[in-house]
Image 1: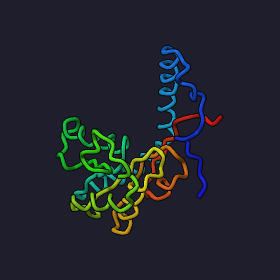
Image 2: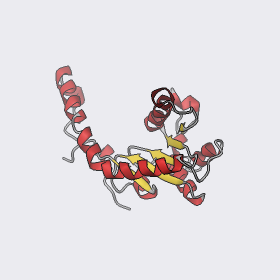
Image 3: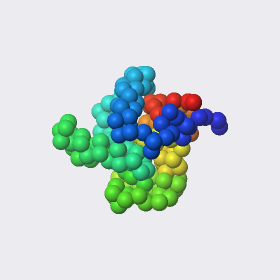
Image 4: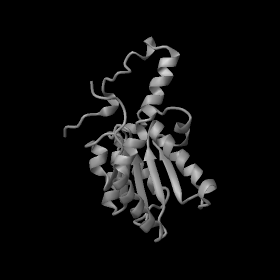
Length: 187
């Protein structure tokens, strides 16, 4: 399988250490401005995933985010904010991170490489066919996340993903992929 990992490409920001603070801040702001346009391009994918989630929730289903490192932490933050923000039960939206709860604050090396652990982690929550599992991985190559979605498919559990790499293994594995291409411009 051939795809270009946008998260590991050279960019116009390779010499960050040589930039002034003002230049760094301006460049970060300039890149931030590209995100809404990237999300706009993904709106049809987002709509399909949200429609699936709504239909599953009407059947009593829940959302599970799975991820490693920063991606896992973002899923946990989103899940944590849903009850106070939207008034939903605390177990409706769930975040699971490779390496367990200790990985929220400290990196757990190699946890992301275990392709079978995500299913074990999901199984602790009595996951079923009414639930939706969303894998989060910017690179789209994290074995923990891909293995989790593959296990869900074997159990007839619906899957989605959020990634930044078109054509990545994760985007190809999820039944409802959301691909928001952001990051370095190709040079």
